[in-house]
Image: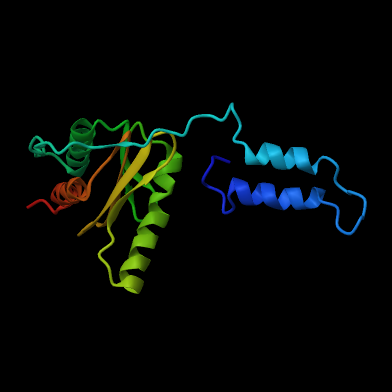
Amino acid sequence: MPPGLSWISRADAARLVAQLHTPVGGVPDKFPNARAVADSIAAPAASSPPAPAAPSVAPRVKLPELVLPEGGILERVRAFCEWAQQCYGADSVFLADEHGLMVFGVHASPEYVAVMAPLLSAMERMRSTLNTEASRGAVTLRAGEVLSFAEAETSFGRFCLGLLSGVLLDDNSLIGLQEALVKTLQEMQ
């Protein structure tokens, strides 16, 4: 387990293990190797892997205008996903419905798409329980990989956009993505 993620510090763990080694009232030591274990816990391992790099924050830049084709909804969604991928340098972009089913994706992993339904459900619960406007966010996954998500309520239903990249999108970027997603999915006249 990486340092700092445990609910107990190295020093406290070493102290507790060392107590196993300390004879009480002349009773023979039941755990003769406890001191070595305590010492190994107290000192960080020399070969510990470096902590993963924190994801960089997306720089504030003026985004190119989203130009949607005149075609059907699939062409509009494809144009939107390609625009979002280009704007934020995402490795993967996908759109899922409220049931966690992929509507469209560019290099989308089924595992990431599947978590959209629980995310939408959690945001709905946060809105109703905490009286908040939770509808977007980001989760740092591993080694600088970030899953950013934004929900949109449209006449077609609730959808969740997912972007997998190495940058942490700020709230303004996520709001912009939500607005562009609603524009993409609005009913065509």
